[in-house]
Length: 437
Figure 1 (cartoon, rainbow, N blue to C red):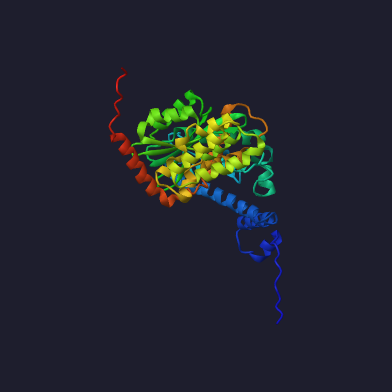
Figure 2: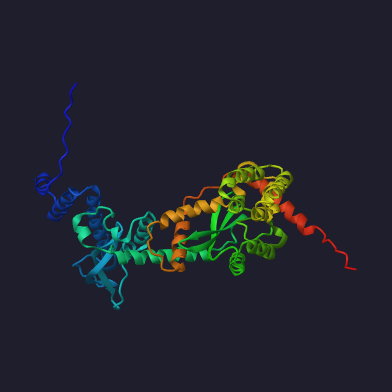
């Protein structure tokens, strides 16, 4: 059976006049304006409607403060005082509006709270931040803005390249400040990951905390290198000052810098256990080898580090170092350096997925991959402060998509092992060395 489907047609000004002749003239005019705006799209029509509602809200607030317009009230506490031009945030831009004013009988300006709410720049700044982090260049923000109608677009402001840049700089400064000054005392950090990552010819040292429930939290960001003693002292002192505690045991996963390992020992003593990143170690060893021998040595190291028996794995690593020492002494020395710390997680009894997560700095690398995506459109880095601002913004963006680490169900096992190991180390009597003859 055939059915007739009625065709859709936009209402015109003439239609509004003939369809509702009994409506007041001002309502008919408003309907005509909205009908015309609808031709530009549904969102533009909603914007026109919203602007009309906003003006109605302004008028309602002024009426509540001063009473109905044109009616004398001897007991009123405020009087109308004309209007002035203002602007409100709308779709990633600022749009001019006329806001009514009022003063108390004593001459004090009456604040228009509805205008203050619409004029707040929080959402506009957030829109700028989101677009920049999504890779939209400053000069293209106006073109990718939401369609709000030709009239509103023509009167809009704060879409220029310089205006967008100023807002982004301000927001990234805020993101960096929040990262560097965050209170860590409320975080139950059980794993501290520290790694140095190169960004725009600068080395950024990043600290990532993993809580008892497996959640990840960016803890800090510094410019420098993990081999730099001054940088290490600064970053560890900063974490402690902001509330990071190792009283119940802490596992530190590091990239292998000697200064970082020594600094952790000095700050946290026996309460910290150190796990070297196995991926860094494999990379460091193979970098000392010729191209033809890198593949088999790397495969051998991967198998050794995957051994659930830490003593057997360590012995196999020493045997490998001995086997390659004659031809490649540099690779052998690199393998032996800090070898015991390659099996810390295994000695804690952690296996499977969680062991794979905690024996590398991949969680930090994953976070930085998002930061690099954010930074891909930057063509000129002015200074290290700019690198830190952009990196902090990328880390903030990454945090919003964080999930708990893989293998988080095993975290109670890790926590128990850390507490037992650190308590044993703390109560173990010191070994007395005989005096030299």
